[in-house]
Length: 482
Image (tube, rainbow, N blue to C red; front, side, top):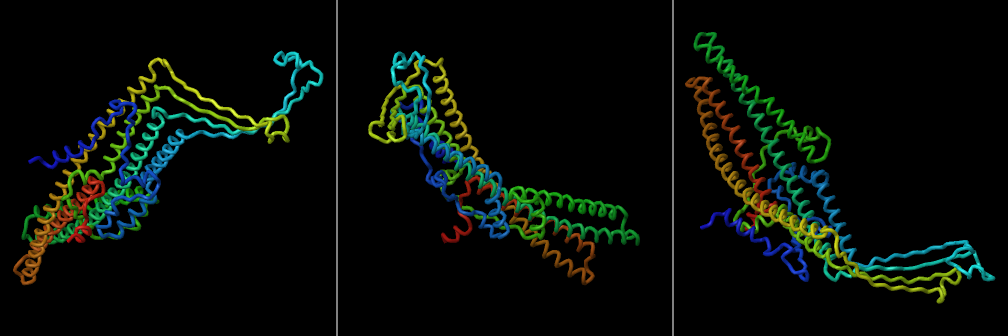
């Protein structure tokens, strides 16, 4: 039975069309550009129809607001959107070359002719020769390259595939930004929770150290116990400023992602809250269905198709080009007769151009285009393999963190019960206060470890969302399927 990675590799690498490279086709069979339906609207300029707002399943309004702000102002998304706009303009430019170019000209001129002009000859010496000449003209002309061999069509397909790659790149940017904000936010909430635990741990150790110092003064215990507790206390206190430094970093990074003034998050997110619960993601879909949604895979495939069309265009650049031209208008020596039938003029032309020898430049252009196809093919395969690794690693990390969190929750529950018992014993005089504080310290350690494990589970869930291209069934979707 093949492993999941092997199945994924077979399914997704098979998506590369057989004989995709244009150099393997006949010139009469131009390559087609497979426009992924999910991104057609992006290329045309409509709003994105991405895999919904996956982050809403964390049920955290603050996180929702942060991501919505970033979607409007993040610079990475703005750069990707500008690249898509440029690619859309490239489509219009490429399509425009396939249509006739129409120009309108109007001119008015005056000239004083020379009687000694040899071009005029004896006519310049005739009686009544008018040396002063007026000329008025209004013309409409058109030129059109007949795309008999599909050169312009190949360029148009290349532009469309480039636009698809840019559209997928925009989706990839949105996914990267939203997942990073979620990761930063969860990390911030974890650090805030850990700071509270560290402060509680330091308080417990401080009380233990105080009691130990009293025991030493009374001669009940040796100074070594007091010194050990004081060392532990200083170590616990040192954790708090380190956590605060990490918290400040998360504030700044979130502000950068949201493209807002540094310090805003410190004001808006200072109040600690609980950790958002990890998303539930269903992996029952086939690997091809899951990874086929990844925008980086779509971008890599679209780039491959674009480079393929570039080979076809480079090949056709070496073939003859056929052009048609025409002009209609009026020409007269004065304004009044300019619009009469006698002033009407018309021209038509047809031509062919062919470069018989260019020193090998056109052949080199074809070879370079073929090399770009090879490069794009390797990039596509590497992207697929990376996607497989991402899904496997994120899934394993999520499962491991979930198991670790479950065990630590059980340990925390037991320590809470133990703490209640020793507190009751201390109230009855059967247990020393130092034992109560020691159990409390252990409980804080278990709580800190549990918080880290739960955050790791949430972060692994986000990594899995990113690995699946924002796809996967969420808690809401799973509930609706029951």
